[in-house]
Every structure is written in C-alpha cells, then in structure tokens.
Length: 308
Image (cartoon, rainbow, N blue to C red; front, side, top):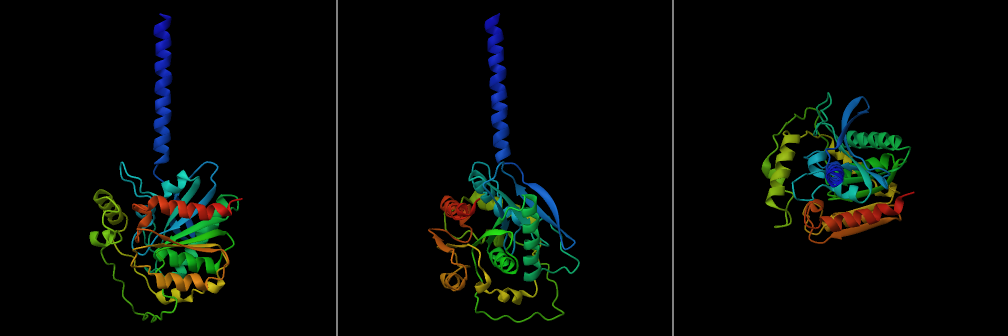
C-alpha cells in the first residue's frame, strides 16, 4: 500500500514538474503584452516582452513597410527567428513600437506620417518606457527606415536613451530632396507578398517556411502601405549633434545599406563611442537569417557596456 502511495506521490510531483516546465517554455515564447501609449494625444500600440530583473531595456523601431511584430517577433514552430526572444535570452526586456498607421496603431486625422512626427513619437515612447522602469535609460534599435527615424529622434532628445543601434541605414546624408506639394494625394497602396519577401536576399539563409510565415504575418498586420510626406525632413539629420554611443550594423550583402552610406554616417558622428560592424553573409534581414547568432552577439556585446 505504501509503495502505491509513494508511486502516486512521485507521479503527481513529476506531473507538476512537467507542467511547470511547460509553462516556462510557453512563457519564453509568449505573445507580447500590448500597451496603448498616448503620444501627443494619439494612441500608439507598444508591444512588450518583459524579463524579470532585466539586464537592460530595448525599444525596437521598425522599417518603412512593416510593423513591429512581423519584424521583431516572428514565430515559426521549430525555428528561432524572433529578435525580441533572442535578446530575452540575453537577459534584456524589450518593446516594439507600431508607428502611426502601422500594425495596431491607427493613422491620425491627417492620414499622413512624416519623419519629424515619427521621431517625436519615438521620443515620447522612450520617455514612457524609461518612466515605467524607474527612469532607466533605454537602448534604441532602428531597422531600415527605423534606423533613420531613431537617429533623428536621438538628435532631438537623448536624455532617456542609453545607446543607439542602427541596422540597414539607407540615407545619403548629402542627398537633396524636393518638398511635397501641398496637394499631394494619398495613395493607400495595397501591400504585396513580393514586397514582404524582398528583404530576404541571400539564397538559403532562411527557410521558405519562415519566409512564407513572415509574408503572412506582414500582410495580416499591414495590408495597406502607410502614406509618408515631407520626407525631406530626414535631411535635417546632423550627425555632429549625436553624442550617444552608436553601433552601426551592416549586412555584407545588403543592397539597401551600401558601404559608402555607412561610411558617411560613421565618420561624421560626433560621439567618440561608435562601432561599425559588418555581419558576414548578412543581408537586409540578417537578424532573422543564418547570421542571427552573430548579429545577437554583436548587438549584446555593445549594449552590455552601458548597464548600471
């Protein structure tokens, strides 16, 4: 009788351990928490993957076409693709913003997004996150369009920013741009599967199943392309005004972020604490592809230096 009882107790304890382990695995892959944060009266969707006793906090800023979750938290069974999960494994809590008109954030009454408006929203979100974490400075990571938006935001206000990481930086600092006419019409172009798959450039660097999942997630989140105007505002960027630590990451085979544009930015940044790293074999979506581990190691080793 005692043997039966002991075995029953052991079975129960084993089941409890299995449930606890399963809950831990689920928690590690959990759907991000959604926050709604007001930026100058407009509700912004902000997605969080928290970490207990986090080493640091990151804000991810997405690119021109797709919103926060497809870009930074892609989930495919049996594959590790989420940058938010990757940084969580390094001990970092993270947030991903949906800019106006992207993902779960609606367009504002003007129906337009502009560089200054986007940069101001990033600054407001950084302040909100910092306040939520007791005034802790936040690491800002911008991808593609998000890299230029983040750089503009840091130039305008940097008190709550711990470091700035720019990946896929595409702006020619010496370019000229015409101002939009006042009667520029909204386009509301429908996004396409071809556009969603276009950032995966190096053959074999990511599975077709993952590409298909990214396309599906992107089109579900952002079926209509956001309308931008006043993009000449990006040329207000002055790297000489940037005194934050900056990490510039370039994919070896990224046609959107060629070396000459990286060099212009890097040499003109005022900060003495700057690094420029080329991800071998990487393209415009390197952090979701085969160089993912190198990408995470480069990013982590940089921001680890700025923890209290």
